[in-house]
Length: 281
Image (cartoon, helix red, strand yellow):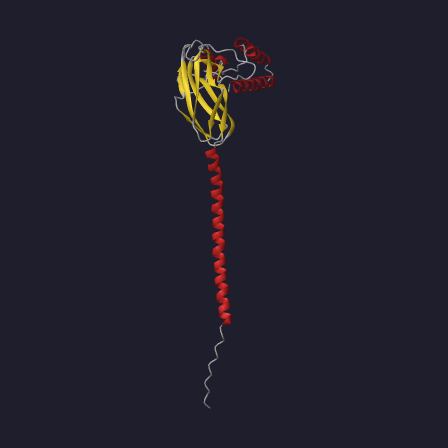
């Protein structure tokens, strides 16, 4: 809008100068030019980027989040890093091998302990370079928060949690135990994987990386289960055979009955035709 005003004023001054020069009013034209020059100097138009009448240029006001340090991601990172400073070292104690029979439930238990807890057997021993042959294994983890425990397996099995899923392990002397009942339905060699996750305050958000420990899960075949499996196969096959024979027998009886009736009708003598009545002439 200010630029339009300047252009209009310039055009008006130009028209006025042209008119004065046409009328040979040179002195008056010179006075107009001098007046315009004085006005331009006084207003500082060449030195100001803002046109006449336009509001002064100012920086936009700062808004929330315009500062990179105020971004949601930065606040989240700062908060998480601050909370992680309160985590301390701990360890997971668990059996490295579990053995059971098919359809026989077994309990898998694992403990998360502080480094000074004696109920987990004292401080953890250094992890060996080769797989341990002991019945109990240990793995380092982080405590000082609420810990969530979860168990999975590649075995065809029903897994039921017997303890609380989320338990606090806050001090280096604390200990929490997770227990699951595992009932496999097929024999073989499988793996049980327990996952423990430190959580933020009273939320379900992870505060640090998961700690996963694995145990060998051997499921043995039993004589009773083998006999039952064979009987199941045989009974299902026997049922199919009986059904097939029944259908074949019913079909055979129906065909035999139809052929017999057809043969009986063919053996019967033909009945003599009745004499027709003579017409009267």
